[in-house]
Image (cartoon, rainbow, N blue to C red; front, side, top):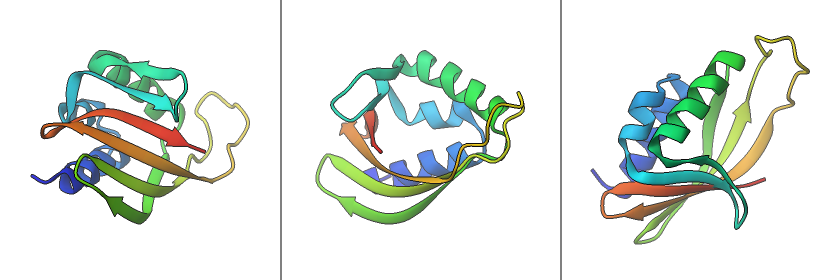
Length: 116
């Protein structure tokens, strides 16, 4: 599977609310973070737990790939994200666009950084 196919599979797993499948494409020490910033979800287990909680809070959460850029070790998606109503009654999050930079080590994703 190419790096682009892997990143697309991660988005498909995300949209299916399948945290286990999402992290299966990641290295054990992978993380999700703000661009050049703080790690939001650390390690495969931290990412799994964080995503599972987000999927419970926003059951209608969805990311649409708007554009794609690819280099040897990076895939960059411009994603349009909609959350829908939160299950805990918190305020509605307006739809937003984000650049997601998927970094790879070998055939696994090692880091996803979000530029918002």
